[in-house]
Image: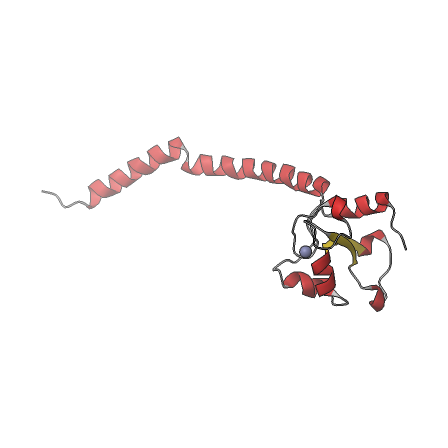
Length: 139
Ligand SMILES: [Zn+2]
């Protein structure tokens, strides 16, 4: 079955152009070109031999070597060999996470600032000095 360029693009973009197994960067134009930089293939997450479908949710971009190595093994098992538990995120998903993290970072930054900020440092120094003075033996 020949895969249309639109379909390839959609699959490629699902993981923002990274191999879903080892997370290496793939080169879109090197689809199917073994031993070129970023050469990739479409992997059936659940192998066709195991009843996997041709639906988009079962298709991922993978290095040719990863795809061969994976064979009919489970995606989870093969990803685990690279210390990965999931496919790389798409660009849209990454952006979403980035925006979320910025908001969370701001809140945490605010909290840290309120605890350890300039005022906190001054109060801390004052308390530290008081304790230090109190505990020093009287001359
Ligand atoms: Zn790979």
